[in-house]
Length: 376
Image 1 (cartoon, one colour):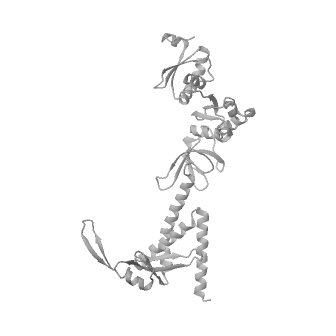
Image 2 (cartoon, helix red, strand yellow):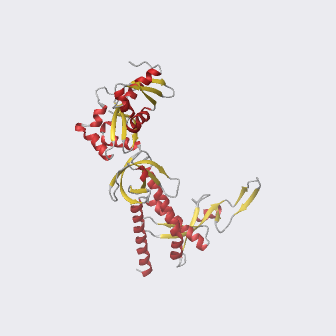
């Protein structure tokens, strides 16, 4: 076997191995890689040799690369209409076209639009020149394919909980390795007071996937109320089968969260399901949240009852819905429960308002009587 042929076979095998490595490493379709290679090499050949009617084809089995020039089968003469409606008769360009009549002499099955391919033996320097020129085109195509593949993988992950590894840190962000892409966890989005260690596994909530820029941007958070929601769904299987339902979550990260739950089955204790046997389920969630307090609130369709439940640990409250359309209500609390309803720095009242979507005006019994509100 001639030395040149042996070298050609070796290069073809080397090429196929390179394709396989790209496919494995980038997780993109093999045909996308082959098409990118063909398009890149075709562009390179046209640029360097001035052959506009040329194409490069790669044998998917052997890796052999061949260059062809082609003639497109057209009518002998054809009418062309320009934008102004002017009609011109266009004749065949013999460098890139062949008439149907002449094409039939070569192959009777050919029709208008078909091509006749002729293999070209490019100059010895084609491999060097074309490969160099094609490289950038191919790399760009592969990047696009990889980007699309990653985007497909993360499509629909907005609002989901992911597990990643803390890879890098700068003054403003942590960068979380999510497998085929990195997510950005801003330091303002971590739980206040928690320490993030390099190389550690971490659960993160996806707040947004932004594909508008040059690179795919996956924005993450651990302080978002959705993080608490997903932790409950992960830890408590009754949410998956619909036995227990979650109405809403309100959160002051690092301080307290209120989670409103219920069940449409009267025999199911929604709050008990969340607590778990010996408090194991809720303890696991609190541990992930770094000790953040959690109030489990029983949701009720009656806003008065729901508001009263949401203001726990305060008890013996009188709730008056003053404007149902604007979601406004007055809550009257006795001396013993007034401070509990408000909470330290007003957190309890604030979270109850967020949870119920009601603007709550909490008053003492004396203040209510001054306004003419009858309190039992």
